[in-house]
Image (tube, rainbow, N blue to C red; front, top):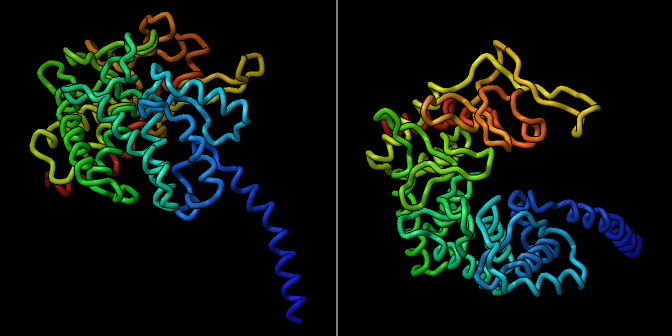
Amino acid sequence: MRRSILLLLINFSLLIQPLIAQTEKQVRWGEILRQPTSWYGSDEAQRIADNVLLYQHENGGWYKNIDMAQTLSEEEQKEILKAKTEPSGTTIDNGATFTQLRFLALVYDATKEKKYQSAFLRGIDYLLAAQYENGGWPQYYPIRKGYYEHITYNDGAMIGVMSLLWDVSEGNGPYDFVKVSIRKKAKAAVDKGLEIILDTQVVLDGELTIWCAQHYKDSLEPAKARAFELASLSGAESVGILKYLMKIPDPNERVKKSISSAVAWLEEHKIEGKRIIKVEDDRLEKGYDLQVIEDPEGRPLWARFYELNTQKPIFVGRDSQIKYDLSEIEYERRVGYSYLGNYAERVLDKDYPEWKSKWID
C-alpha cells in the first residue's frame, strides 16, 4: 500500500513539474514586480536576477527597453559583458534602473544571496550620483546632451526614482537590509527632489497649475523634448507627481497648496462628453484608427499636453505643429502615442477626497 502511494506521489510530481516550469516561463519582464512574494526565491526568479546583474553597467545603471526575463545564449551573454563598461546609455527612462533595483531587492530578500545585495547598492549609488544639486534627475546619466539632460518627469522617470529612494530611506519592505548611512543619503535626495517638484510647478497668470513633462535643469522652465513633445502642461505626468505628493506624511503648507492647486486645475480642465473609440480598418497599418466622438455618458478625459499660453488641449505630430484635434495629426502618431486618457479620474474621485479629509478638512 505504501509503495502504491509513493508511486502515485512520484507520478503526480512528474506530471505537475512541466506545468510549474511552464508557469514560470510565463513571467514577463513587464510583470516582474507583480509576482507572489514566494516566487522571488524561485529558480526562475534567480535566473532572471542573474540576467539583471549581467546587464548592469559598471557605473551601476541599466539601459532601457531590454527584456531581461529572456533566456540568454552563451554568445548573447558574451556580447552583453563586452558592453558593461560603456555607460553612455544608462538611464531612468521607461522604468529603467529603478525597476531592476526593486526586483533585485525582492530577490535578495527571498534568497539572501550577497551578489543581489551588492548589485542593488551599486544601483542606489548610481541614482544618488545622477541627481542634480538642485534635486532633479536627468533622463540619462552620465549626462547625454539634448533634451535628455532636462529634469524628467516624463513616463514617471523621476517619480519612479524618488518613490524607490523614499522606500529605501524608510527601510520599508525588502529594503531593511540597507544600512543607516545610505538611508540618510536617500532621505536627503528625496528631500531635495521634493523641493524641485514644488519649484517646477508651473505658474500661469499668478496661479499654480500643474507640471511639464520635462523642465530645464537651470531655469526650471517647461522644456521641449521630442518633436511631438513641446513645452506644455502635462495632464498625464502631473497625475504621477500628485500621487507621490499625496503620500507624504505630515505635508507642510507648501505641499498642501501644491496639491490643492494642481487638483483644482485638473478639475477645471477635464474634457467631458467625449469618448475615444477604436475604429477597425484593415486598410490601415495597424488595422484600426482612433477617433474622439461625442458621448454624454463618457468618462472624463484629460489631454497629455496643454498649450502654455491658452491652456487648451493640443495634439502635436512629428512636424511639431500644434493642432487642436486628434484627427489632425498623422496616423502614425495618432495611434502610436497616448494623447488623451482618463489620467486624473481616480485622483479627483478617490485619492484627493481621501487626502483632503485627512489634511485639509
